[in-house]
Image (tube, rainbow, N blue to C red; front, top):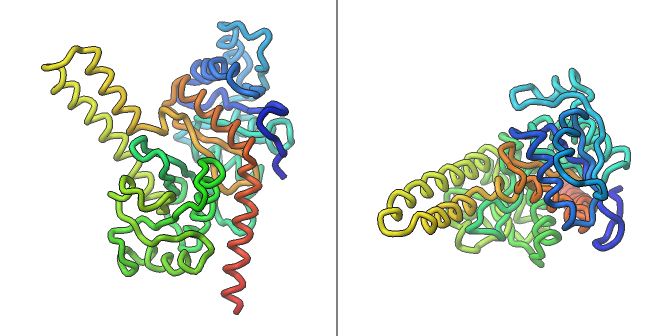
Length: 347
């Protein structure tokens, strides 16, 4: 059971994987220091003690609730997650996850290997009842800040029942974390008609329609901007291509605008417009991270290229994730939908 914490009471204990990410531990530590004064939180920097302490010594943190918890090494993006867990049982993400399992931390934040963090979370914390695999999701595009996409890359092949679970978790997130009262859930497809889409989408459609979700049917890629749905569901193969396309498009458009506008506008104004466009289309990198849905513990995973601002954003997300009690809410709602589905099958 997740610890029951409310905003304004006990500090949320955040286990930060200080060795995870492309710029660790420097940017991890910097982000932690940046955000600590604005949150009711305690930060536990999990990493190789010497380099982490070296970075932390650059700041005046004598009176800050920041501590170091020792680990040994990290899991790289090029390593097989399960094999790496066996070979590196004291890696930073493994130790950080164990702190949550043992009740010494309330949430883990990692910018490191997504596969390593997911495998560690599943093995240490376990999956919620009725769920085959965890998933990643959340708002991913600044031009559609209230639209949640699930899955964004953790599950490349999904059966219809798994997609339904994603819908339940995404709806719980949209309602609890984003304040959307009765989130509209849709399947991402190539047409709005029920008969459109591949076999996966067509078989999923009836499951969603029979569920207790506020299912509004199929939506197309353009509908991220038409406010037809609050939660859009697809498998991770499609979702990951989609978010990386928007990231690449944002960078290309920023360069294009700089080239065109530099002829008619001052350089500082051009740079501001290009920067705003890049941030809008690269929300996972600028906001920092989002929850891993479906595990029995609070886990927030971020983009490996995040700098300090993104790390600070991920820590902020983690604190709110714990304060709203999202893990328990998701667990309850998933159990309700699973039980209802099984009853229909038995009948």
